[in-house]
Length: 235
Image (cartoon, rainbow, N blue to C red; front, side, top):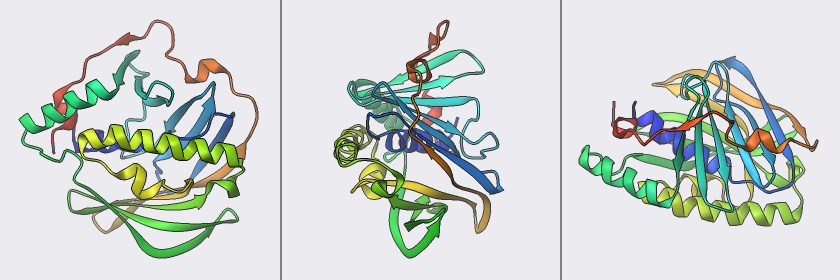
């Protein structure tokens, strides 16, 4: 596929490192096509859904993260297939990337921009994301407590971020600890192509309603597919 697949993997790992009480955040594309549609937590697992019009993510894919087992599962809903990423498979990814000439498959840089915003009534700090030397996105991160997570949830959030950092470190990524450390979650995501803004997602709603365990499970009839080295080849 492309380096964007590698970034999507890193993003999914980091985004899905949240606590184990049921929790759902919905996002709304307020300009163009946003990246993130929803984050759902149930049964100790998390599911991340891209916005239907996302230009950065495969809109037929979903990500399920199981912090207890340090597993990330990418579902291909169109083909009824899934790919499992754990410590062993991410080591394989690192090796494949080296063979493809990408010593750092993500070439990802994240830094605070110094800007602060108010989004849906929440204060947030803007982080700039550069990918392959280009401005890729801005994420405005709010304190998870402001979004309704309890103290125990935030403690678990920090633990699972550390877990994600360990996995991402195998493919050269520091996205989790750079942006999500300290118990922060995104309330606004701005996507760029060159200097042009192509999409903005903003927090729409937060729900604590019960979520079915099936929402964070591999659907019946899906078959596992091996990692494709081209997923991590630069464009």
